Length: 143
Image (tube, rainbow, N blue to C red):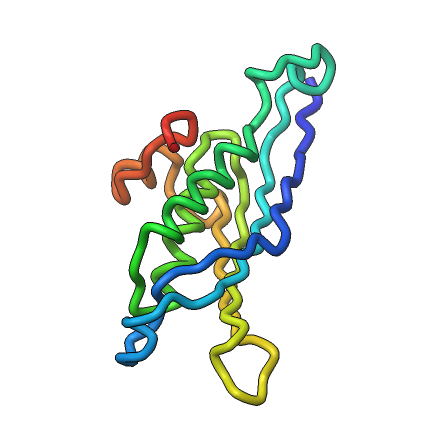
Protein backbone atom coordinates (compact mmCIF):
# COMPACT_ATOMS: atom_id res chain seq x y z
CA UNK A 1 0.00 0.00 0.00
CA UNK A 2 1.31 3.43 -0.97
CA UNK A 3 1.50 6.04 1.75
CA UNK A 4 0.98 9.56 0.53
CA UNK A 5 2.00 12.70 2.34
CA UNK A 6 -0.27 15.70 2.41
CA UNK A 7 0.80 19.20 3.31
CA UNK A 8 -1.65 21.50 5.06
CA UNK A 9 -0.71 25.18 5.06
CA UNK A 10 -2.39 27.82 7.19
CA UNK A 11 -1.23 31.11 5.71
CA UNK A 12 -1.19 34.54 7.37
CA UNK A 13 -3.46 33.83 10.33
CA UNK A 14 -3.67 37.29 11.88
CA UNK A 15 -4.16 37.33 15.64
CA UNK A 16 -3.53 39.53 18.67
CA UNK A 17 -1.75 38.54 21.86
CA UNK A 18 0.58 39.69 24.59
CA UNK A 19 4.12 38.87 23.51
CA UNK A 20 7.28 40.47 24.81
CA UNK A 21 9.02 41.27 28.05
CA UNK A 22 9.22 45.08 27.86
CA UNK A 23 6.61 46.86 30.01
CA UNK A 24 4.76 48.30 26.99
CA UNK A 25 4.64 44.84 25.35
CA UNK A 26 3.24 43.28 28.51
CA UNK A 27 0.54 45.95 28.85
CA UNK A 28 -0.84 45.98 25.30
CA UNK A 29 -1.72 43.24 22.84
CA UNK A 30 0.25 43.12 19.62
CA UNK A 31 -0.51 41.84 16.15
CA UNK A 32 1.09 38.54 15.22
CA UNK A 33 0.90 36.63 11.95
CA UNK A 34 1.04 32.85 12.13
CA UNK A 35 2.07 30.58 9.26
CA UNK A 36 1.91 26.81 9.62
CA UNK A 37 2.95 23.90 7.44
CA UNK A 38 1.90 20.42 8.53
CA UNK A 39 3.13 17.31 6.70
CA UNK A 40 1.00 14.27 7.42
CA UNK A 41 0.29 10.77 6.20
CA UNK A 42 -2.96 10.82 4.26
CA UNK A 43 -5.06 7.75 4.95
CA UNK A 44 -6.44 5.90 1.94
CA UNK A 45 -9.94 6.27 3.40
CA UNK A 46 -9.64 10.05 3.06
CA UNK A 47 -8.03 9.98 -0.40
CA UNK A 48 -10.12 7.29 -2.07
CA UNK A 49 -13.26 6.74 -0.01
CA UNK A 50 -13.83 10.43 0.82
CA UNK A 51 -14.14 9.57 4.53
CA UNK A 52 -14.18 12.76 6.55
CA UNK A 53 -13.19 11.04 9.81
CA UNK A 54 -9.95 9.82 8.19
CA UNK A 55 -8.67 13.33 7.38
CA UNK A 56 -6.55 15.59 9.57
CA UNK A 57 -8.92 18.42 10.49
CA UNK A 58 -7.18 21.72 9.76
CA UNK A 59 -10.07 23.67 11.27
CA UNK A 60 -9.44 21.95 14.61
CA UNK A 61 -5.74 22.85 14.35
CA UNK A 62 -6.56 26.47 13.51
CA UNK A 63 -9.02 26.76 16.42
CA UNK A 64 -6.43 25.36 18.83
CA UNK A 65 -3.85 27.86 17.56
CA UNK A 66 -6.27 30.78 17.80
CA UNK A 67 -7.32 29.86 21.33
CA UNK A 68 -3.75 29.46 22.51
CA UNK A 69 -2.48 32.69 20.96
CA UNK A 70 -5.40 34.90 21.93
CA UNK A 71 -5.69 33.43 25.42
CA UNK A 72 -2.01 33.50 26.26
CA UNK A 73 0.74 35.80 27.46
CA UNK A 74 4.27 35.16 26.26
CA UNK A 75 7.54 36.79 27.26
CA UNK A 76 9.39 35.29 24.33
CA UNK A 77 8.49 34.64 20.71
CA UNK A 78 10.35 31.33 21.12
CA UNK A 79 7.82 30.13 23.69
CA UNK A 80 4.85 31.12 21.56
CA UNK A 81 6.22 29.43 18.42
CA UNK A 82 7.18 26.28 20.33
CA UNK A 83 3.70 26.02 21.86
CA UNK A 84 2.11 26.30 18.41
CA UNK A 85 4.52 23.71 17.03
CA UNK A 86 3.41 21.32 19.80
CA UNK A 87 -0.22 21.86 18.77
CA UNK A 88 0.62 21.17 15.12
CA UNK A 89 2.37 17.86 15.70
CA UNK A 90 -0.11 16.64 18.28
CA UNK A 91 -1.79 14.24 15.85
CA UNK A 92 -0.18 10.83 15.25
CA UNK A 93 -0.35 11.19 11.44
CA UNK A 94 1.89 14.29 11.47
CA UNK A 95 5.44 13.63 10.31
CA UNK A 96 6.73 17.21 10.13
CA UNK A 97 5.53 20.64 11.19
CA UNK A 98 6.89 24.13 10.65
CA UNK A 99 5.57 27.22 12.40
CA UNK A 100 6.53 30.84 11.78
CA UNK A 101 5.23 33.74 13.86
CA UNK A 102 5.78 37.31 12.70
CA UNK A 103 5.61 40.41 14.90
CA UNK A 104 4.89 43.08 12.26
CA UNK A 105 5.53 46.10 14.50
CA UNK A 106 8.50 44.82 16.50
CA UNK A 107 11.17 47.00 14.88
CA UNK A 108 10.66 50.54 13.66
CA UNK A 109 12.48 50.18 10.34
CA UNK A 110 11.57 46.59 9.51
CA UNK A 111 8.42 45.14 7.99
CA UNK A 112 8.44 42.38 10.59
CA UNK A 113 10.47 40.20 12.92
CA UNK A 114 9.76 36.49 12.75
CA UNK A 115 10.83 33.21 14.27
CA UNK A 116 10.47 29.79 12.66
CA UNK A 117 10.73 26.43 14.43
CA UNK A 118 10.38 23.00 12.86
CA UNK A 119 9.61 19.55 14.24
CA UNK A 120 10.29 16.29 12.42
CA UNK A 121 9.34 12.84 13.70
CA UNK A 122 12.68 11.44 12.46
CA UNK A 123 14.54 13.72 14.86
CA UNK A 124 12.24 13.29 17.86
CA UNK A 125 10.85 10.54 20.10
CA UNK A 126 7.65 8.80 19.10
CA UNK A 127 4.43 10.78 19.21
CA UNK A 128 3.25 9.14 22.42
CA UNK A 129 6.53 9.99 24.16
CA UNK A 130 6.30 13.62 22.99
CA UNK A 131 2.70 13.85 24.11
CA UNK A 132 3.61 12.43 27.50
CA UNK A 133 6.53 14.83 27.96
CA UNK A 134 4.67 18.00 27.01
CA UNK A 135 1.13 16.95 28.00
CA UNK A 136 -0.37 17.78 24.60
CA UNK A 137 -4.08 17.23 24.15
CA UNK A 138 -5.00 15.26 21.03
CA UNK A 139 -6.32 17.61 18.34
CA UNK A 140 -9.72 15.94 18.37
CA UNK A 141 -10.22 17.26 21.92
CA UNK A 142 -8.91 20.79 21.27
CA UNK A 143 -11.38 23.60 21.19
